[in-house]
Length: 209
Image (cartoon, rainbow, N blue to C red; front, side, top):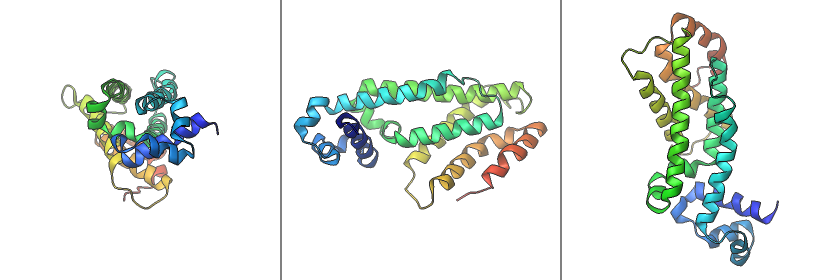
């Protein structure tokens, strides 16, 4: 692994563990096994490291947002949830250190808001599309599915900050998906519920912690 890659790997690990404001450049250098001077050669400040990590995240997110803006099937949405889960877990500091970003890194905070809004919009579009396809009931009141989309995002955020518990990553992913699908379940039509039971329920195994 090249020095720059070591610095980024150490930074993201430490940011996730301790939070942005609690990590110093010396800690990053020590974790990467290099001197602070060597670190400064590649990144002149902590903000430069954060900028690079956010650019890295945006690059990874681009195909998720661009290539499958519409993922109509239930299996497609379940796969998209898995993508959200693993990616947001990897970059959890960026989504959970909200106050730190807002106070100390306003530009990066704006990037977070843009990404967050894109995810919420993508979820809302899926709900709307499946309402049109007859798998979800009509909204009980105007704007209800927008609220559901925002609620799902809140669940995603909660799952990133919940206390670390035991269990393998596959079990935790199932719990995550159970929590999200529980928001959709009451809104299925009869056809939607049948499709859910056949395609999704068997995969989840009704696993709830």
